[in-house]
Length: 118
Image 1 (cartoon, rainbow, N blue to C red):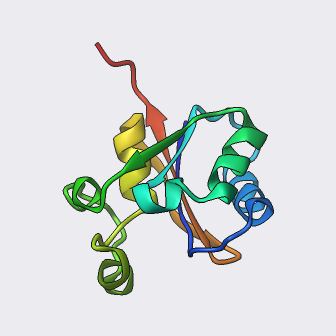
Image 2 (image 1 turned 30 degrees about the vertical axis):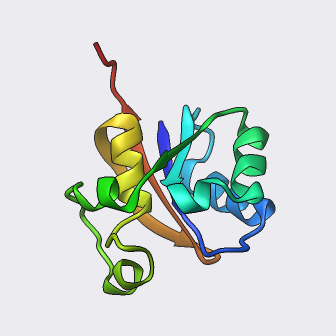
């Protein structure tokens, strides 16, 4: 599973880990994916390390090109794309969305299937 996350600046790693755990349960994840400017935050790296997975980063332009179930005008105004978690999960996984944007303690989490790529 590819897990897309949308966070506010300054969100701590423990909050990210709790949110992802709440959404994915005992499923194995392949990566955390998010907006490039959030991917460089230490908490995102720490959360990825806690899961033992890499972080995949996408630009607002890349995320904005992805068709998603849920979009937000507020997020679009803040970061330049109407979806971060869902779009990042879809881009990182390449498969279908299995869990749409779910907000847990202020953190957006979405999950997509990782499809084999040629």
